[in-house]
Length: 338
Image 1 (cartoon, helix red, strand yellow):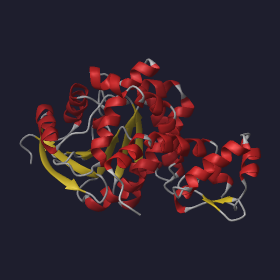
Image 2 (tube, one colour; image 1 turned 135 degrees about the vertical axis):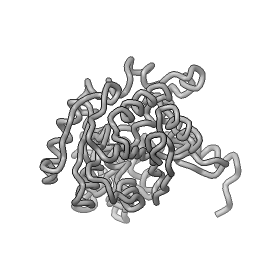
Image 3 (cartoon, helix red, strand yellow; image 1 turned 90 degrees about the vertical axis):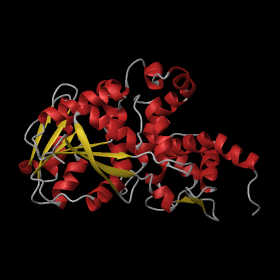
């Protein structure tokens, strides 16, 4: 095959949202789940999903041309490794991520120009409120968001636990810990650890049930509250994964200063975030930075920007520990304790 011309490459980029929406529709219709027991025809799938058979066939044919499903010689469609990712029960399932990106976030991205022109958050313009307020008022979307974050961050969890040495930490506080998946993995990996999960009261209740189901409720305290107001005391390390990138510098400093107040002299601050590298090489974090602009109103940061943010909140940036995923562990200590 001849290499693509610049015009052809640009054409592929410009039509990228076609593919994203096609994957979203397949996820919404649970096509992958319907195929887990074997191949089925478009007509059979249409009957199961209350869709138009000829149109569903066209969707599946397009996705099969990209390795998402495969059309067999008898006209039936079957799963491929890529399509397996859309099964709701698959390890590391990406179905919820497809739903989240294909619904509210797709509409918000349509206002990227607004965000670039004004510096304001497109999601707020489209839905009339910030995303976390929206999720607090929409239970099903909040559950989808939680599941999507597990799918996104699953690979990061193992990579972070492999890369960072938790020796010397007795109590680990997961601030903004969501549904508890990260703390569950950390406590399971390190039996000496005890945990504190801190998040908004409604989120904390969901996390409490998950930790109980994992048999870890005896080793983990779940506390409801807002990190904009206070942070629980008593932890040896305060971990936040993909929290600070949700917020601008002013709000991030409020959170970090509250952590600073709660920390003992020897406690550690551990941010799990992407670090924007210099240069022009492909970098997912630079694209994620645009998502932060459009959806929550936050930003991805360079190493120097994290160093400046830490200093303003009363921390020294001790080190940045890379992992095998896109994130690093950005370790901070109170001024004068490194």
